[in-house]
Image (cartoon, rainbow, N blue to C red; front, side):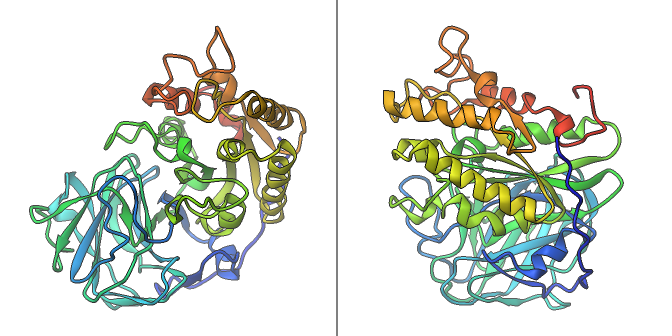
Length: 418
């Protein structure tokens, strides 16, 4: 793999009022890569709106309510900070109080770990529209592959709130300010992460940087077991945690239904196109070193040509390289037998995967197609990996995807499988 020199960024103070304009590749975002943080957990935000399935209240918003997000850490540390998000808000949102804790079970926290969050020393903060904001750092024994609870209380009506839907994770909502309630007994269920888009952990000798996975539903959560953290980036995090010595965190920038080239007409909850969310969801993640790209199957399903998809890949490759980052291309999984398959789309899929494998424009390739294909018909998912729709892998399939990643693409010193 070609290794490009990393940029040397500017040092920023650790003030919580590091307000990050979204989607623009801000100077603040550049500098954050080289501070003392890596991304322990991330979720790509979308605009608040009605979602056809699930029980996400993001469309109607919140007033005098607390959301409690359940997040799975890929990396651990002794200090964390939380990234609140109003990335798609049309107006500012007042946060009355927020907290972080280690999960006990469900909405309940381990009481001794419950930490109130502050923002430049204050317990409340106003989130401007179209912006994200970090909390002050807080001491917490946050272990890799553990689960945290991030609670955010909004005393006033918010309008539709920035969220991440279809999470394969049960989250929680309660009336009033319950941010410091460890019991969780007052919380009802919600199917989305709201007002929170990331948790950073302190960079250490153990976790030296972040790999960000940019993808669609196959990366996000589709068809994996709820509350089990069996997305393929979760399995990749487990592999990286098994490596001795310095390793990397994993940030999941997958979005169900997402397209590479544009926003889908179906609904805002599917997110803007990958080329348009690259800065916020990938390049501006703390500690990012390498990107894995697995997008394009939904574009094929909407009859984009191979040339159009390849041009989208080239845009992302050029922009990530311009920031001194490596980018690994993932071949698109087999999809024959799914509702979107046609002979013409199969030809597009074949041309796109051929280019990913042979063009040499990526810094490395993960052949997800080969790793998940049926031995009898390589244009189909292996029956053992098929969730039942011919498109999305199940828990076993996502584990096979993670196993297909050559860790030397991410950790050049690591030459044997973990």
